[in-house]
Image (cartoon, rainbow, N blue to C red; front, side):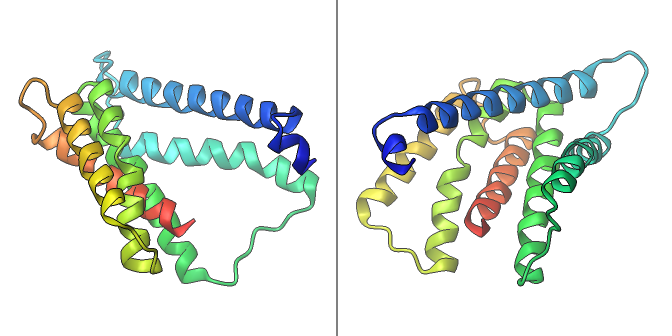
Length: 177
């Protein structure tokens, strides 16, 4: 099976399909959150309520799968798991706060900087090595995020800073994983 995946076999196609579906679902989640946050129909739904609903529905979806697989979630490192989980929840909540006040495209573009922060956390906390070319690539990537997210010179407004904070939290979660 590993050889088939290396040669672009069925496992590679299935993995690619999962990535496309996951991207579509994350895009849909953010678009629905944006709609609920700015719908203006009188219903006051906050970013924390949407964050709670995201995790509640995720849990409801996963419980039957865990039960069917007879898997009991557990960890040997509860503090590390708590950090990862907290960073993930904070990242999602901050992103929902951000998309309430800035365009969804800008928040998404800023969110693309999370791998840059994951690299920084990996260097600082995990002892990973990054040469000058990786640092240069990270700087160019972040400059690109700023250019894409801030063509209206609002790259450093409250909403954009919330999105950057979300990206930092998501980078921490990635490094913890």
